[in-house]
Length: 428
Picture (cartoon, rainbow, N blue to C red):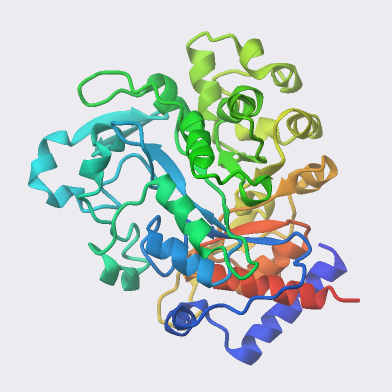
């Protein structure tokens, strides 16, 4: 860890103690007034509202996105899945029992089923079995009520938005010289395009990438400075770069998301290798850049070499979205620590002090690095390597100091504050 990073972490911790800043208690004040915005340059550092301001409102609702914008987020992030009639809606997953009141609708009881999505067996209700009109009869609810009980007071109040409605919100909220961007994620694109079936057994065969681009074009939201498109699948992004975007006459920066590099696998690679697809035809030279070639056992860890990152930059990706705990590896704390003094010991990890070399390699390749996800609640936080309990604010300042250019925040106000602190500390 560099001296600058150490000083930044210490200064951040001192500042927090001095001002008593706690993201756990800021909602009412921050929701009541707009975030302070500046006309000056943020030096390319962006704050991304993860599923909106999901720390304060049920995720993937227009109200969550609107609050993120008003707290100062530069981009809002909708996860996209498809309905039975092929409309993109914003949900964390296509299985919606955890984020909607679908289980309370007796008219949909017979649509509860079990499916395998990206190799994981799930039981519930799935967006591809509902028309948009039916989806609009549902209401959103808090996905993690045990962690965010305050958000449950909004259960049942908000509709499930379409992607078009999210784009329209960003257009409406872009005013007074402040543009609001969209950072959509295609969720389970291999499932929707190739493997998935509706409850009646018919193949889904929907290209989320095609639908995404069609929506942006239809809404006239085609400024490449206001859009990032992300996916955990590689093939989906290659299709966007090589075929879908050129056919539509648009070009947007693409971001390769990384699940856990130690164990998780890109599902498109698992599916294509298992089904005997032409891997060289799909992935081109990437198949040779990965040691041993692409197979059903290829993990995200195979995609962090300098050679692979250079190839990504040259062929399709403008950036990567790694899991923050892979960039800054953690070790388990036993026992857990009560860092915020609420009587519950929920802080369970400590950083090792290492920074994974994928960060330096990505920056060397010219890729943007946008880690996910920074959350203010104690159960998501960690300690520094020397045992200082961090807030999300300090965690963000540390990551900015390591060279990342943007982050996903459940509490976007924390991201805005962290950026200001970092830029102030960086002044000569």
